[in-house]
Length: 457
Ligand code: CMP
Image 1 (cartoon, rainbow, N blue to C red):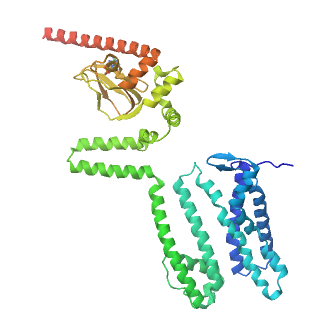
Image 2 (image 1 turned 180 degrees about the vertical axis):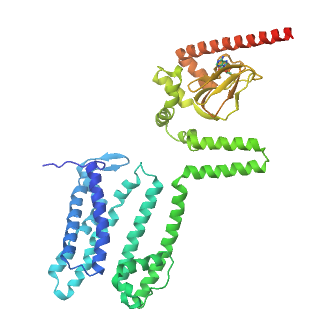
Image 3 (image 1 turned 90 degrees about the horizontal axis):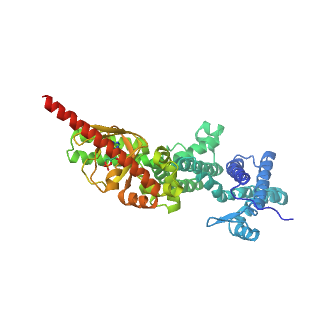
């Protein structure tokens, strides 16, 4: 009979890994504690130990049937799985399940039976194997990686502190000698001693009294000094990375405001610049999409850009019903730009190098001296196409009314798109002609009224 291969990412396997992780943590906490607190010969300890061994035995069976990834390729060939497991993890897994505690308890004479308890530590070897389950937690895409790192750091601190506390309890000669509190809760006192020692606080209320204790304290102090540095370094790093975008943004803001002060930039301009950065932060957390995308391969760039720019594609009427190829071409070449209220995005008479699509905000299309408003354009509209189409100077000025999120398209891409997609070219030409006519009409109307007024006066 052939048995099925287990998928390493299947729900059942993940649940199993969680169970093994729980069993390992339980064994790590319970076994050393039971040994130092003298409950190692109780029935409860034997039952718990037997259950742990059984669980770990089953894990060997399951692991020897679970596929694995080699350079992202899932391997499901039975022979390769077995060889891989033999090389990676089989030995510690078997050592962790050896029932030496039970065997020695049965075989050893009464007076040396106490030796058996040292072999009940074997399941702790499984700690070496929980990295896979921990990596699974680490790769969880729903939780901030910094929180996961912090959680794992706390987990390892507590596991190490627990093991050190149990070791201290094992060699601590008379816990009740110094303080009556020690007798009622020796573990708590041992844990307290561990924490004050490894964090280098060391109140000195619990001190070594025998050579063995002194040696142990020296070792724990050395470990503690290393651990302390490790913890502080890690915590500082984790906190700095919890919101990496925010810390980078704050750093940038500090640089900008130092520059503005150093160059004596006038107050109103300073306010405009800081408002611009505030808006960038609020609208896109300060990220520069283009610089993130440029590291990705083209197919991924397309998928991410399609997702990020789906809003503008839906908003702009001339994109509706366009072919997938056209959308891809446009999307990959759009560059996000932000304009602040009052900005002159385009100035009449200038040479045009790009056109713009509005995603959010409104702009006014105005005459050179801003006395005629030809039109007001909002989300989904575009402007700047006439200069590109005719290779002529801009025929109006564009002034941002409020904060405007726009996407620019440069002339080279625009020309390429016109050649490749004649339907789009036709629609945009029609629109441009209509706009030119409208603008010309409004201009001549204004000139006529001005002339009439001059005649009257
Ligand atoms: P361009 O000439 O490149 O730069 C100014 C832009 O204003 C122009 O392209 C058009 O996109 C836009 N424009 C000009 N006149 C109008 C109008 N009447 N209605 C809407 N937009 C206009």
